Length: 248
Image 1 (cartoon, rainbow, N blue to C red):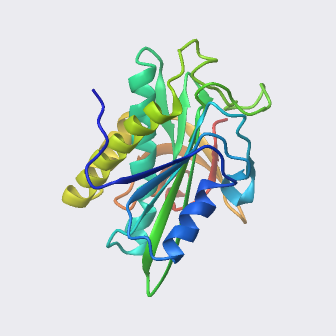
Image 2: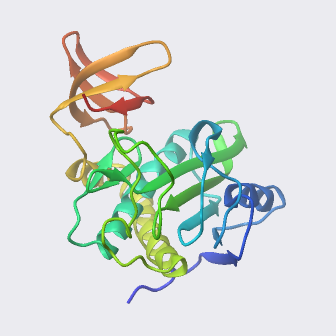
């Protein structure tokens, strides 16, 4: 039986523009957190680079606002906490499906992208005052996408799995996130790195990393102690902090 994690608040709204915007407003107003904000319908959600995140309803659209005592580098590693929590959610409701993690935070179920994860923060002096972790999971439906894409969007329903109700999915997600965050704070990044690598898509195979000014092709060899992608290239090992990754 999944139970709500102790110490975490929860707000459920029938409709909102963006749970990320709601979390930011609460943080700036002094909300201590941690608190999950979920909307049954989100009309103005967004993903990476400001891209719109379409939500027809029946899916999970939620943001966690928290104030952890972390450096900016440590806060960035919450993307791995988030990905592992979503992978746990996928394993809970689709136990027979193949769940894989594509660096840095894409969750693939049977090869299709089932979730979006976005982190935002504000602060000074290298320490964020607050962090918002936005997570959208395709439960009942998926956004339109190119079926020929390398990782077309999918949903639990499309996989033939009875989709959970969004509030039930939020409980599972919140509990998994709390477990991984507790472990990260107690043991550091190493157990998260090991868990991610155990589910990493294309580990030991060629990948293409597109950076703003160059494209790097190499063998996905490892993650380093900071969570950077390590590629074996003809020029030697290359560590990449941020990039769009593709599988040739």
